[in-house]
Amino acid sequence: MKKFILLIAVLSITIGAMSQKGKVTSALSYIDQGQLDKAKEAIDQALVDEKSATWPNTFFAKGKLAQSSWESENPKFKEFYKDPLTEAYTAYQKAMELDPKGQIKKKILTSMTYSQLASDLYNQGSMQFEAKNFKGALSSFETQIEISEGELYIGSIDTGMYYNAGLAASNSGNYDAAIKYFQKCAEMKYMGITPYYQIYEAYLGKGDTVKAEGTLVELPKLFPDDKTITLQLIDLYIKSGKNAEAQKYIDVAKKDDPTNYTLYFAAGIIYLNEENYDAAIPELQKSIDLNGEVFDTQYGIGAAYINKAAEMFKKANEIMDVKKYTEAVDQANVVYAKALPYMEKAYSLILKTSILWEVLRNYTTDLNRQINIILSRLSLTHLKENRDFVKLIRGIFIISLFFFAVVQRRVES
Image (cartoon, rainbow, N blue to C red; front, side, top):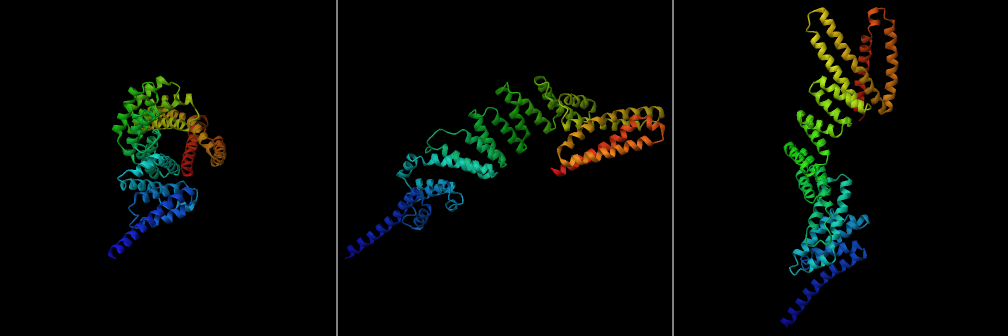
């Protein structure tokens, strides 16, 4: 009798276990049929039952469900898991951990499950990147890399995944990860010089200008014919305040590209910031000769003349002799007046940017006409004859409105 009761108990346990495992089998069938809601119900029951909660196939089925929910176009199914693809990968890994005989591993391998999962992660990462969810994109691309480098991945390695991960890391501010992935690209000779520039930018992001510079100065050995390296070095040295080094590479770049107006502009601005106006003016003038439609260059040379004149006025004030003082002031006025055509040109360029500037331009024209009327009615003969004085009055007016326009443009932007 006892043996009979024991047999019944064993049969009950066996039947119960088979019942729960049957739910997992049914869940896999539901997944294949696209009935993911029924599959979810069956798997959830299997996961809380002690007889099937540690069965490898339960987690394999959960992995398939999570992956299928991400691939589904049904929004209800997509809400099954917060991060379906991560959930899928974790479930697959757990299934293999619970399966010492390796049956799940074979199933994943023969069904190319991980190859499809890697593809899904790439697609997810791309969408996250497009949505500017850079941390999420990095996580997706890193999991794609982990899977693709593993033994269960079937197919050729997509070298672009390292570059994608690097971009996501860089945009999320994780510069150490960015450097790691871009270095991998460089080792694989993927995209030529571009990964090195990304490494350089990542070091700048970290604030490590020494390693940023070290990355660039080694590039001519690897890419001797690439002229963009010099431009990157110029940019680095300008940002670092190493003006002498910047000017050295600007001179090199000028020899290779003598009609590049931006090089003369860069040289001129460096001199301008150093208050070396006599050196700045010819560089900026050369830039204008090559391209006279650049606001910054026109404004820069105008500022150089104004600042130079200001220094001359300051020195003139130290002269005690009246005649010499007058001569010094006249010379300063001549230099100051040279700024006017450049400021007027810069002003005309900034006026082209919006309707506001058209209104301001009309307002300026009207006021300028009024100034001419006032000046023409002045009874002081020496004022009428002194054209430089007239230019200065008009220049002050134009420059004042110019600065007003600059402030307004910044407010708009």
